Length: 136
Image 1 (spheres, one colour):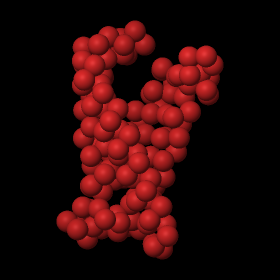
Image 2: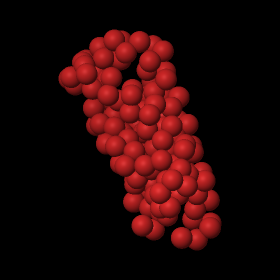
Image 3: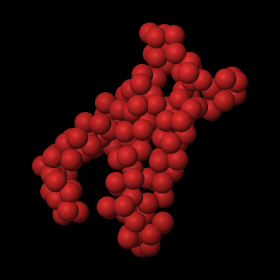
């Protein structure tokens, strides 16, 4: 893998990881029961809120650390597809006056799909612990 590609993948991995950690922690801070209620209003089982919050925090830290990047990127991509289709799609890309469109989720989905396909091992624990590289 070229060094330029690895640097760009590292940037994407860190930005996605930080974003998911912050969003996951916010779910815990607002109260998971409240988040579960919101998920319920979307027609989703309430327990999914707990899974999503946990995955966002753990998966976000895993991305930051470069640990299981492809696996966590894939799992978080599924969360983004769910967020777009169940919560954001009806509002449109920019969300009109509410500003609650799906542009952020779509951008994160693109980043996650890139990481799931190509991986990112620069400065990551996968490389240190398992000797893995992105091309494997």
